[in-house]
Length: 155
Ligand SMILES: Nc1ncnc2c1ncn2[C@@H]1O[C@H](COP(=O)(O)OP(=O)(O)OP(=O)(O)O)[C@@H](O)[C@H]1O
Ligand SMILES: [Mg+2]
Image 1 (cartoon, rainbow, N blue to C red):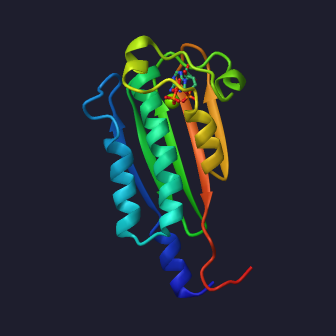
Image 2: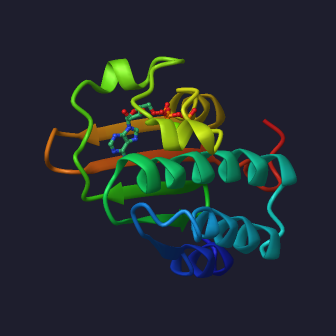
């Protein structure tokens, strides 16, 4: 492996942003920060859009349904990993929660325009891999992977 590749591997970047449960005034700030970071790093605009959708949907889920938590991004040479964790009530039936249209959003959430039950399905659609870990009573962790095109390789 060449010196240039070594340098790139060593500069793996991890950034993490705090998310406060029920704080609708600041909801969305973590995902905008990640979007701006990726823009400043000149990532492909389609990739940024996919990551932004996943970041925003997962952040809103923490604000509405979860507990305090964080949204983090890890940028590697071949992939970008978005991870959201919270210490809220957890998801009892993950398979059900992943279904389009399923929502436990309350009337207040619906008045603000949320609660279509499309957040998790959109996160699945816009990421290359998604893993949801949760147990009732012990928080939720969602990890999404986005594979990056290899530079200088036409495959
Ligand atoms: N972090 C979380 N903690 C606890 N429950 C969650 C969490 N994220 C999702 N859920 C559960 O999964 C359901 C489906 O989530 P999803 O994001 O698909 O829809 P929604 O948030 O209800 O509506 P929308 O995202 O369309 O506004 C939620 O209604 C909630 O019951
Ligand atoms: Mg949602």
